[in-house]
Length: 102
Image (cartoon, rainbow, N blue to C red; front, top):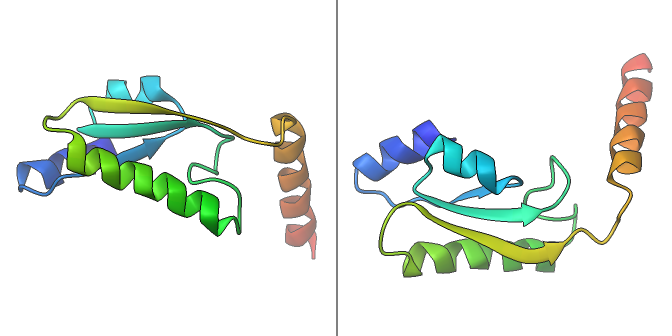
């Protein structure tokens, strides 16, 4: 993701990348990054929660318009409403294993 963002920026196209871990975004050197504390695989929020997803995209577009230089990172205050991330991940793994078996 960081490499693509840097290439696009070099061509004059501004970018914003979404991350679950702000440290990773900074290490990759992305020009602009938005970080949220959501489980892996859900960087734009819960499945089928269009309002939440649109809000997160709006924050990204706001950053794109307001950040005057590369290296700008924003940590959004939103939290995943389901606290059992490990249980969610295990459920998804079981669902995948069952669908593979069928």
